[in-house]
Image (cartoon, rainbow, N blue to C red; front, side, top):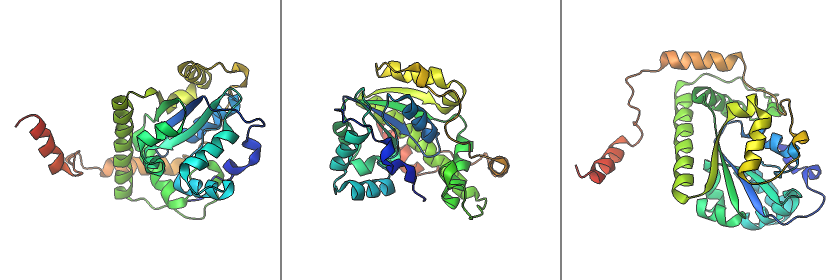
Length: 264
């Protein structure tokens, strides 16, 4: 996977170090639109710069650049650089990133006063197709679209991606609800169609005033989907067998546990 090199640029550091009082954590999944949301929030100047600092490859680079071997020390150094003047630090965390922090509990301990935005996409099939293409080409954002790899349609790869997305969305919902975490749900369609209102809702959620004039009114990142995405989506839905069992993954143990709880 090609790294998003711009994240390491010192121009994104804030000029004055500010203690982190709140953390905005975008709880997301792959291809959910979190990259666009992070850039929108960054442009306001009031949410830090929410990027995938906990992505394994990104984290490795950050540790080397900041001279730290532990994730906690690396994140503390990042908070010193990327906390906005109002005391808010932002980070994107896919559910698959949690092991890098030692789990959800350690994530909450590491970042001061965490507030979560659970970001999802309405069209899960489109998300799964996008994931399959990105995994083959290595083009995870628009700036990576110079890939010479020609992606090949693979039903099983898209199916696996769809199941992963649904599983991770559900896992985020379960974890946030069961832990009593402060969170709000946000669909990516809202980010695209009503950007200003979405940003103001987030600011209200974390109880933070922002300069409304700095909210971008035009897209800050480029759309990646194209005709190929639509072709694959149509091909998958025609190939899908509706008799497939939805709980195929580890189904026997799931039902055994469920029946045991119900006393049957």
